[in-house]
Every structure is written in structure tokens, then in C-alpha cells.
Length: 311
Image 1 (cartoon, rainbow, N blue to C red):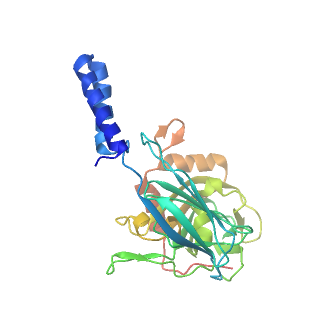
Image 2 (cartoon, rainbow, N blue to C red):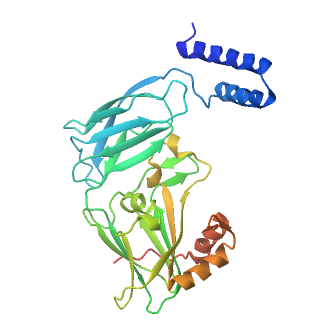
Image 3 (cartoon, rainbow, N blue to C red):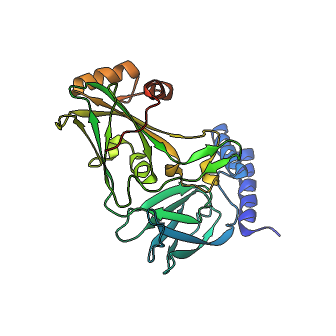
């Protein structure tokens, strides 16, 4: 038996065919385009598949459950009958909340609790049974460069989650604590060539995935003598440890498995602009276009076998 959405789709397609037979070519193009969207599923007409499951929220560093944590799920789509209603739930004393959601994609999830940093993610299918939140305040990172250093500063945060080639699956986050539990201030030493490699817990990757131009107050750069140095943002990028895998279906939170790369320039705005021009001679609407290959090559060439430095 056909659903009401399916019947509505059939009537819509029949109407479009009717218009196609009796209108000019411009309208034909529009109508056939709409028909294609309907048939291809871009304008979803299927009923929503219900799905009820439990989600646990824990303290990222202690593993203790968080009670009274708020979980919200919002749906987005181009559906003719609109997305499902938003879903909200609150965790109990064991940190567990029951979500009466659907299989609709995409889904925007938000998990928050008093005195904790909010966690938000978009996914095409919710498979996470557990979320981990970090206590406030957010982390602050200081990068120390050699005295009189001038030039590009390449900061690379390497996620602890990795791809298991043999098991064909993601290896979970191996450490949730950066340095020691509760620590929020970190200092890392840049090499003489301006490269910084950091083995990062999700405490850092979640923040720095926003890009260097959106983390004001979280990152600052000083010289070894303690003096502040002028720094200009150039470009940022994220890369999943294994590009052939689709992390939304792997049961891991995407910002916990990305390697984060931030490219800054220590020096004047004039020098920073000149450096950017060597990377991206082309402009689009006033914005320089740095190719991914050029951007990543800067980090690949700078990477060394030395261990990350932390103070």
C-alpha cells in the first residue's frame, strides 16, 4: 500500500508531465528538472523511519557520567513534506538519555551541560552511543618560536585516533587527556624552520578545527625571550587520517579523528601578503586561492621525526 507521500509524488510527477505537454520549452526544462529531483531523492518524499536508542554523556577526562546534560537533534532537508520535528532529551543520573529520533539525514547534534564545553556535530546517520565533554574553561595554546624568527609558522595537530588498515575500521581515540587531567594551558616549541607537531587529544582538535581565524583568545605566539611577535593568519586545513573512509558511519566523532593544520606567518602584514602571493597568485572575489596540494606540501616538507615538544 502506498504512503501518502508516495501518492503525492505520483500526482506531482503526473502534473509535471501534463505541463510538459502543454507549455513552452523554458517551462519544460524547469518541470523536467523538478521531476528529476523527485525521482532521484533530492526532494525526499519518503516517510521517516523512527529510531529510538540510548546515548551516554561522560566527562572526557574522568569517564564519569554527566547528569542533566542536554541533547538536541535538528534535521535539515529539501523535502517536500519537510524534515522531522527537532528532538530534545536530558540525561539521567547515569548520564543516559533516550533519543526518539529518525533516520533522516543530515542531522545536527548538540550536546551540552553546565560547566562543560558544548559539542556540536553534523552527521548523515547517528551511530554514536557515547559523547564525551570537556570541562570549562577551553584550552589555551602558546607557540614559542626562536628569537628573531620570521616566516611561515606551520602548526600541525595530529589526532590520536587512527585508521586500522587490517581491520578496515577506525581505531578509537587513544587518549582523552592532554598532559594531565584538568590542564588547560599548553606551550609548544617551534623548530628553527617554524614547524610545530602536536600529538593532540580531542580537547585541542575540537577547538582548532574551527581554523586559526576563529580561535581568537585560544592561540598566541611568543619568542623564546618571552616577547610577543606579530602573527598573521594565512590558511587552515583539516585532513582525515584515511581519506577513503567515511567517518560518519564509523562510530567516531569527526573532529576527534582529523589532523589539523594551521598556517600562520610571523612578520608584518606586508610580508605575509607577499608570502601568500607566492602560494596563491590567483584571486577569487578578493580572496587568495591556496591549493590543497601546495598547502599540504609545506607541512609534509617541514615534518621531521622529532617528538612533539610540550612545556
